[in-house]
Amino acid sequence: MVVIMKPEFTAEQLQTTIRAMEAGGVKVMVSKGSEVTILGAEGDASRLDQEYLSQLDGVDRVMRVTEPYKKANRKYHPDDSVIDMGGGVSIGGDKLVVIAGPCSVESESQMVGVAQAVKAAGACAMRGGAYKPRTSPYSFQGKGVEGIRLLLDAKDATGMPIVTELMSSDQLPMFEEAVDVIQIGARNMQNFDLLKKVGRTKKPILLKRGLSATIEEWLMSAEYIMSEGNPNVILCERGIRTFETYTRNTLDLSAVLAVKQLSHLPVVVDPSHACGQAWMVERMAMAGVAAGADGLIIEVHNDPAHALCDGAQSVTPDQFAVIMDRVESIAACVGRSV
Image (cartoon, rainbow, N blue to C red):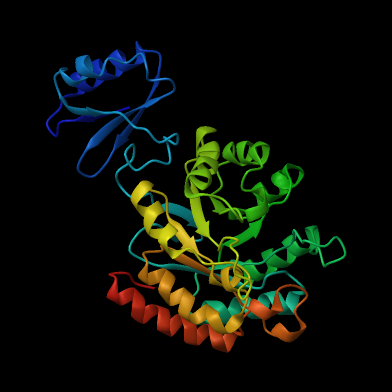
């Protein structure tokens, strides 16, 4: 349930309404937007008297919310969330955020060189996997702690914030100290214990959609993080598994529109994992921006043919520069800047 206050409500009327809701056994979330203030009931709202609340002074109207997610729900938080990613970079506003870098961290020269190249082309944050979840136990699993050190070297060289994937809660203390944005990968989207633990941090969390997750399941995973006190969730559409085998996954652009309607959280699109083929990345990145994404996350490698992980979907720095030019033109058409 949400209670929408009138524009001219007084502080006393607000407190009276909050106390009336708390008497019904719920916690009250207060969301003060640019045009409206909303009181959201957190918990079992079945005991709340909707008619009584609607008659209180200062109350405009009362609405029942049927969706199971509350903190991630736009009805509770009508204004778009803007999340600080560190390094002077924020996502969720008018500026499109582009995150770029290799699938996996391989060496200092690779990581620093790619980071410098993507920054020169217009990227404002870098990605790189230090820990890699792979389908096969015999595939390259990442460089671990050494990979985090190489990411920090690239950050020192460019000033860009780091986005990298957390695989286990055992790694969390190191990530809290070294990483700017913690990525929760598709395979861990419903690792609820891990979601709760990152929810107790202050770090922004980039939450990738699960391989076969519905939009509601995706938002409920965001709710797990937010319910522990961390509101800084960035959603990532990275393609879902369908019957199609030509592409690695199927990029669900309709999900971008749906989530922007249902939630206030920023959304980024990952065309690299969605398609699995480098030649598709440019057009799918453009489509993601046209659909309303707040950002993109693109895999860039200096030598894709010899990449230790996902070379087929990685573009070169020169190709990335072209993508940025094309993306900038689309962004201008939808009122965004790069």
